[in-house]
Length: 165
Ligand SMILES: [Zn+2]
Image 1 (tube, rainbow, N blue to C red):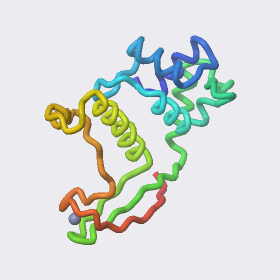
Image 2 (cartoon, rainbow, N blue to C red; image 1 turned 180 degrees about the horizontal axis):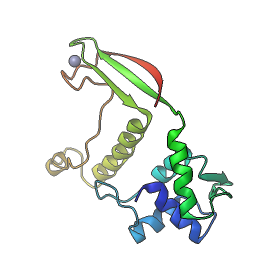
Image 3 (tube, rainbow, N blue to C red; image 1 turned 30 degrees about the horizontal axis):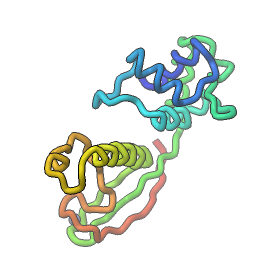
């Protein structure tokens, strides 16, 4: 099941819930489990809702199903028609000034890396500064977009590109 399907399920039981309430419901029912097994975060729910404005609408911080979405059947029809529409994706192109390596990252990549970053900071708080075991807590990888993945230099040139998918 896709995350947006899980959100639709939660909202068809009770329309008008905050992203946080939705995240808790999905985490409890396990109708959608992240690939890494971590709990869903409110931020992820909000991001998905923003990505599918034809499925959900926001009012006073609460999320509602679009009125014309009556059943799961029609939600699938809606989704497939959405997929056929052209979407503009904005990506950041990075060129390494040292080894000429070229790589890209998208908006969603940045968000995921930020979420992991804050989780890692939470872990550091559990441990004293410079405490050795903290060095071995590496189950979350923070992608550093300001560093060349090949040679590790921070001397990079960034440009933003948009394209249709
Ligand atoms: Zn490089």
